Image (tube, rainbow, N blue to C red; front, side):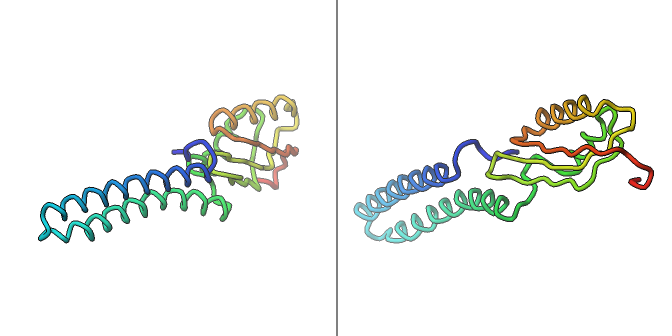
Amino acid sequence: ARAPPGSTSVRAAFVHVVGDLLQSVGVLVAATVIYFKPQCKIADPISTLLFSLLVLGSTAAILRDVFRVLMEAAPRGVEPGAVRAALLAVEGVRGAHDLHVWALAPGLPLVAAHVAVDAGADADAVLRAATTELRGRFGLASCTLQLEPYSDDMA
C-alpha cells in the first residue's frame, strides 16, 4: 500500500524512459504494418492512442503520490484512526489528541501527537513503547509524541 521506495524524480525519469522505449517500439511496429499493408494506415493513430494512454496511466500514479505529499494528506497505509488506536493500546495511555499524520515524501510518513498518560505511569516507558509500536507497525520515518498527564476533562 505504500509508494515504491526511491526518489520520486528517479521513478518519474524511469517511467519516462520506459514510455519512450515503448512508443519507439510502437512506431516501429506501426511503420512496418503500414509499409507492408499501405491500406492499414490506421495503425499509426491506433499506436499513438494506445501508447499515450499507457504513458498517462503510468504518470498518474506518480502525480497522485506527489499530490498527496504537497497537500499534506495522510500517506497511504497510515490511517489516523489506526494510529490513534495503536496509541490507546499502549499500557499507560489514556488518550491521544492533536494527532497529525503526513509525509515528507512518498514512503516517508511522520506522526505527531499529544498523548495523555495515567498519573502513575512511567513516562519514559510509555514513550518508548508508543514510539516502538508506531514505528514498527506503520514504518514511520519520524514519530514525535508529547506526553501530558491525563485529566478527566480530556474525556
